[in-house]
Amino acid sequence: MSGIVYACVAPHGFEIIAEIAGKDRQRFEPTRAGMIDLGREMAACSPDTIIVATPHGFRVEGAVSVATTSFAAGRLGKYGVHVDMALPHDRELALQLLEAAKNAQIPVRGVAFGTASGDASVLPLDWGSFIPLWFLVGKGSPQPNVVIITTTRDHGLEPLVELGRVIARVAAHSGKRIAFVASADQGHAQAADGPYGFDAASMAYDERMCDIVRNNRLEDLLHFDADFVEAAKPDSLWQMAVLLGVHETVPLRGRLVSYQAPTYYGMLCASYRVN
Image (cartoon, rainbow, N blue to C red):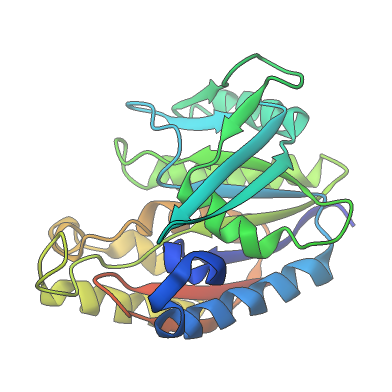
């Protein structure tokens, strides 16, 4: 079976990774357990390539960026400890996706780093990609390839929903088993001493997101009020809009795996299996 075989919503708080969590290791355990659960499900679906939509990668003004490198690698650290990861980047699939998105009139740009291809063509992994992939690529050999996409907030949600439809169509014709990951932290205004302060909208936003997953109603993402979203300070809506487009093309069944807000932002793990 080729095409979309699995999807998920995965958070990207640094302390989820036990090796660098330090004194915060126990506090983030519910989300870490959720990520391990997602990793087990991902492994059972045996994807050839994992497509990650992140809010923190190469941000191109006015456009979604699609990395077209041959490899992706990064280092992440906290409390004086570092972890490293290097992965093959599916340049062939990325170029197919880039062409199809342009043909669909989606504002999209290809981005590379170092050289266009070959050993020096290595995308620096942002934390929004690195942290989910730490749990989702598995430790076996061979590891799946990845494709990294960075969303934009400059054109509303519909182009991102259309991007999800394009991803599903390209996956169906790729001859490959494809998984999609919406890298997403939820409301960022849940603590007065956090960088965004406290706003009750933040927790209300997270509650709505949990309900959307529980009730399998991703289409409700399109009905969020812009002022409400601005007050809640999430970075999830845009990547989950891409997931909506995937879901419209390949029906998926959602499951809320975990939710917690151990710090100033909320983290939700959700699994989406093919119906």
